[in-house]
Image 1 (tube, rainbow over the protein chains, first blue to last red):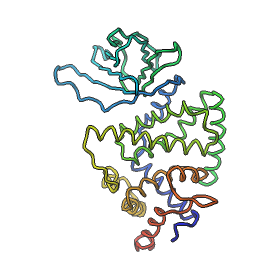
Image 2: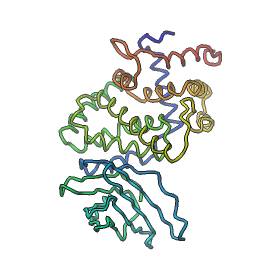
Image 3: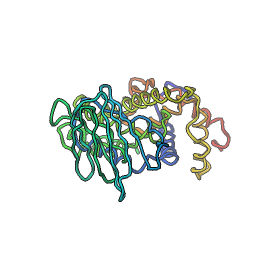
Image 4: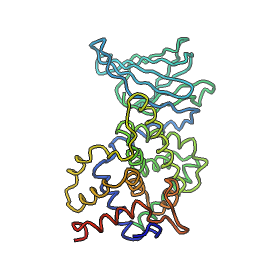
Length: 154
Length: 190
C-alpha cells in the first residue's frame, strides 16, 4: 500500500464506514444546531466574541441554587449569576469588567430584554424564563454590538 | 455517496452565494448542513461535550464575520475546519491553565471501551478497534476527513496539512497504516 497513490474506491469505502462509526459512537448533541442557529439569529456582527469560561461550581455559601457563568473577550469580562426567583423563573445578576455603564441586551427566543449597567458595571434582569439566552453589549454603535456571547442554556 | 456528495456541494455553493448576499435562511441551511462536521472536528481535538458544543457555536459566530472573504464551498468547509480546530486549541490552552492535563498525542478518545458496546456489528467493531489503534494524529485526521464530502477533500486535506498530489489528496500515511493493519488482520480479510 503506497502513501503517494491517490485515494481509491476502497479508501472512500473505509472513510464512509469511519464516518458512520463516529456518528454512532459520538453523535452530536440534539440541540447543537438549534443553539448555533440561535446564536447567529441576531445576524449582528460584533467587534468581539466573548467565550464561555469553565462553569464555576455551585456556590456553597447558601442553600439557594446558584450558577455563575463567565464570558471572556479580549476587552471585557462578563460575569453572570443565575439564582432561582421562584415560580420556575430566574434572576440574572451581571457584572462587566472593566466597569462601564454600557447597554446590555439579553436575547431570548421570545424576544429581548434590555438594560444598562451602572457605573460599577452591574446590571440585572430580575425575572426571566429558563431557556436559551445570548448576551450582547453595546458601546460605540446603538445597533452594532461591541461584544456578543454564544447562546447558553439559562 | 460520490454523487450525493457532489449534489450537496452544488447545494452548498448555492447556499453560500445566497448567504453572502445577505439571505438569512441560506446561512441557517449552511449551519444545518455543516454543524455535524464541526462537532466531530472539535471532539477529535479532545474537547469534552460541553466545550465542543461551545466551540462549534463560536466557530459559527466567527464565520459571520468572515463570510465576505469566502468564495467557494470548498473554501467554506476548509475555513470552518481550520477555525473549529483553532477554537478547540484555544479552549484547551485555557483549560490547561486550570487543570494540569497531559498533552500526550497518543491519548485515546474518551471512553473507547464504552464506544465498542455501541457497535453491534462485529466487522464494524473490528474496524473501530483498528482505527483506535492508530496514532492520535491519524485518528484525528481520519475522523475529520471522513466527515467531509469528497469534493472537499483536497482543500480540507491541505488545511489539515495532509500531503496531496496534483489531482487530489493522496492516501497518505494514516489511511495507508489503517489499510495495512486491516490487510494483516485475518479476521478482516477472511
